[in-house]
Length: 320
Image 1 (cartoon, rainbow, N blue to C red):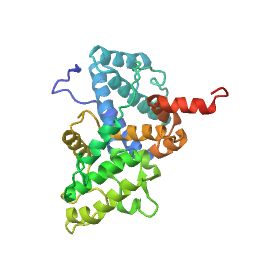
Image 2: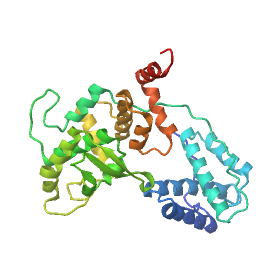
Image 3: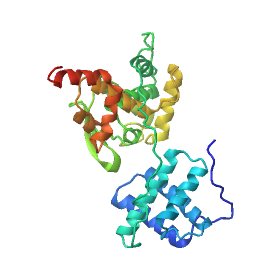
Image 4: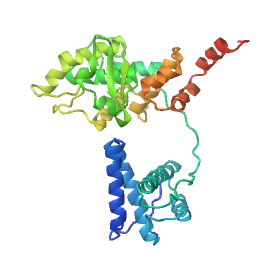
């Protein structure tokens, strides 16, 4: 279990000036950067932790020096926080002090040159084709043995959800926020809104289109039972499915299929990208479909596809 720096019950979170600055920064994240509620909450928690440490260490959290911030990160390391957590806290500090500096609240940015611990590079998890087939059969018209079965309204929904996640590499938040009006059956594509509400249009293959059509025609109306909703994926109460609800559906499908329950819906996104590259898609197209701001983020999937690299090398090298 990861150790934590103890905080006494009577200890206040931070002084009023720091609390006000943190809230103003979080407001700026929401308004200026259009950050999600989850992102804003994560920043607030991390900065509140830093402010509590500053109070204990008798450091002014808004005018801390480079050395004092290094001391804070060092104490996190001594308390056996993971490298991922330390780097996340560092990222929050960098963003916070950059904002303080730009808005004129402080004259210098002590966090701009801070370096976090190096993290070992890890490759994304990818679901094997046989396992993907088992996963996608859990709620389908036929079971893993090919036997036909009746689908309940929630089966139709869950099948459409899983097919959608794999068909276009959507994030869970994008599936949760998908609206009926943004599904174009005639063109076989969907419009999703990713991080920062960036819009992108992604093609859908025929199986995903068929599953979505069946759900919207025969499943969703029965789930809503007369209620109205603009969202595609709805709960049995007629509300938009939350990201947590989607993850629960995915975990239940893994359990039913007898697969590794440490897999996540995001692994469907990784598999989508890897399978596209294996199938001959170019990196730029995959970047656009995933909604990555930088090509370097997409390039990690080339490490998962040595066959694709060999193919490109053979086609492009003069002596290939």
